[in-house]
Image 1: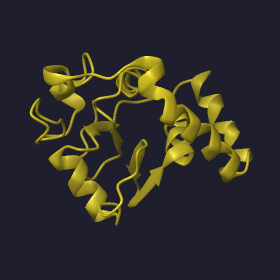
Image 2: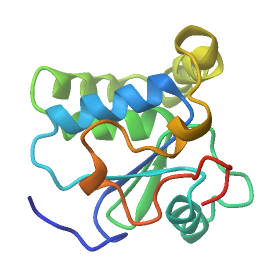
Image 3: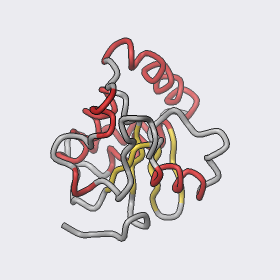
Length: 150
């Protein structure tokens, strides 16, 4: 496994309380073309540092955030850039970048708005656990403790 330093390599920030997000992170990790992508919860100390470093701390996005090559990508841009890192056929989803961002983000926001109702929410201790099998790829202090803190 390549090992980018803690917060300099590509990092995917996700909502650790969201069952859909948790499963999506597991799917990405299992199908990534390579294994250099690291993970952290949006509301973890590591996630908050990365958001602040990209000017997103004041109004943190309620979406996936991909921090890569010195930039932070959000919503559909983040999801499609992550898809491009995956093996085929998942990589082909990145072709959706040809659609205008407002249309892509409309779909993204609809799923984001309904994700807890459709897929559920992790609670208590489960929120502080990394997605199954990914402990070594989660940034240090990259998960949220059960009490909501870092």
